[in-house]
Length: 553
Image (spheres, rainbow, N blue to C red):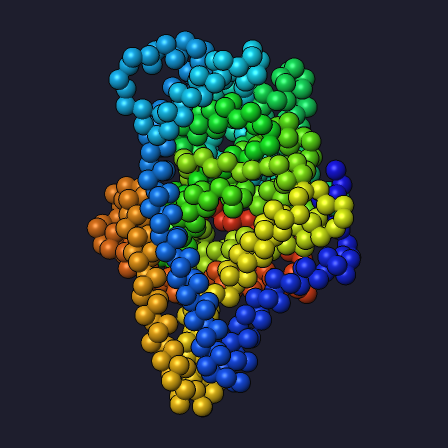
């Protein structure tokens, strides 16, 4: 069990090498362009063109997966998963209902019929029935208001899944103070009788060998919930665990869809189940830069879902309780417990582990504090926390570059290289693409006489315009994903939603790239991020109150 955890204290030289590696490569990617510009503008141009052409090819793939992912999302969201799940209760009888019927099946209808047939013919007890399963839903909170949490809990009751098969846990932090404890008690009073069980669990502060973060909180809550589940004689294999942030709202069919996919998988304990994360809950209220970032992050989750072999746990996700118990739940030493959970699970199951995409969303909010300054700071901290997933690089390295490895070498190496590439690209590519074409001309007076270097800005600009096709697709689809415009906003707000994309070059560098460099620099210097910077969960009303208070002052 202990070898699944991150190290404490001083790292070995081998571990430190891989902590330094992502930052060293990211800085070197930009530094190499500067050196080549001084030595040979032609080589600098060739280097930059290689990067930009590679990114242009990737952009074409991203555009394709964006459209494909959007269509899959729309199709899966339209399915009556509650009905499909119910049909698994007696699959043989359900098949009789389909015999000779001319029904519009919808998304994966034939797969559903095959599942019914297979389960109906399987030996008794091979597959669980929906009526014997429970959802353990852990809502993590630090200092969020009652209104924010109340909306999240209410969204569970709005789901088509039976709430009497939901065990809801509000996991709150003692460091949140008396106000947080009062919010938890108020939720307990309101919802105690509306689910199979509703409980609140306070995570003590200053626990040894823990970071200040979400992982320790939800692990502590899950351990308490497991004790209650055991006391009720509910088999651990009959419980699926979902973690939610305080502002999350699952799609109405999410838990039916999740339970369905859990039942039809033979090796169901070796899967995580990953919904789409759509950051559109407050998209009309958030400032323009945050809207661009939130929309980009939403499309990133859609695109990732179309590449299951590269899919990783992100934000809210679900996993079987039995598997979680075996690996002692989530890491208590990482501030990116969601992405890190993939690697814990991968090595625990010795490489026989996958993340299964669920093509319906868990809705989340874009970053928004009560003030613009607070929002801008909170957004940077959130992206830096996500980028600190680079801390998984040494963890993965020491688990595969060893004779005692717990997973097959070559598949693990491919995963390691993709992990390293993703973090290096996140930090360096936006900067290289945005300003790289001018570097040789600025740094080397001889570059103006070099035909290749002289034409470089124009060539880069042309390739960028070709790659813009993907951006236009994203803009078009973003309007189809937007929730209805609130009545408080006029049509010019919709125009602003289109014009906001002019900020994308700025957000790509000022937020995505610089936050990644910041995170990787912390890792390089051994100044570890061991505190989860909680993202503010302001509402339109709270922001208006803050503005009114400021005016009075």
